[in-house]
Amino acid sequence: MSEKKFASHADLEEKKVSFEKLSDNAYAYTAEGDPNTGVIIGDDAVMIIDATATPVMAQDVIRYVRQITDKPIKYVTLTHYHAVRVLGASGYKAEGLQDIIASKQTRELIVERGQQDMDSEIGRFPRLFNAVESVPGLTWPTVVFDKELTLWMGDLEVKIMHLGRGHTKGDTVVWLPQQKILFSGDLVEADAACYTGDAYLADWPATLDALAALKPEKMIPGRGPALMNPQRVQQGLAYTRDFVSTLYRSAQEAVAQGMNLAACMAHTRKNMDPKFASVFIYEHCLPFDVTRAHDEASGIRDPRIWTAQRDQEMWHALQAV
View 1 (cartoon, rainbow, N blue to C red):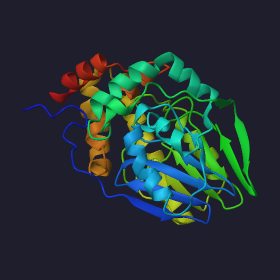
View 2: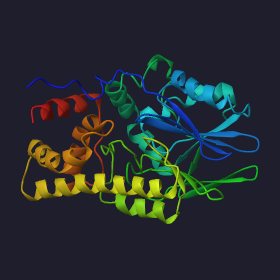
View 3: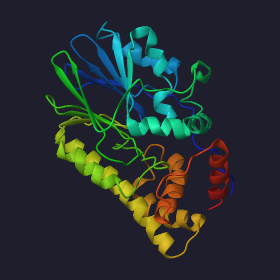
């Protein structure tokens, strides 16, 4: 059996970008399963939610924003710490950037493992890290909050909230209560696999419950198309719950039966492949997902740090399965 190319090394085809209007204040920049970016336009400023992988790639988001407003882009909000979503933040400095906002838990993760995560992800995603030489270093928040931060962008209320752990320990959502629009980050996906390499799988369903309790009518997931009505929002929440629950249950069954990681992968595939094999980045995510799920089911409560070396060792070990 020939080994698959590492992670997303075979993913070289450029994705089609969509820039969709959700309201007079909210837009979604999506690209066929690549990390999404949210845009909020207030009375006198713009907020970007997730900053793309490099400053050069951020220029494409800026190009779309500038087609609809010339207001300064004062805020970048990070839904979590993964490099593919945050290292492009410096690209907004020339557009008026004042503050980079993140949860306290996200800042802790950057302190603890930001450099390792950066090195690891650059190795995983060569296409997404186009012009990686433009990255000046780690992205550090300038405004940090614990549970909730309310920002008034003129008359528009913007709530930035940490409602629980799931995709990472620092997951942050951005909520427009007046319009019932939610930017979920990678707590919710649509038509794309959930990456769970740094997840708290046992906690994730309860955090989804907290999102559902907001009763969002539109949602921008971390990957996949914008969910433009309450029915699609419910489908996105249900899909994500099914993915993470099936994954974790499979790992719990494997650990209970004394399976090693390779056997856990085979067992998980039996449960996951029929439902999820066709979605965006499934084959990229699954080795990392199964490794974390096996760890958590084995009692390793906090995710181990991924390094470029650990990535490669895990990938090679599981490709023969």
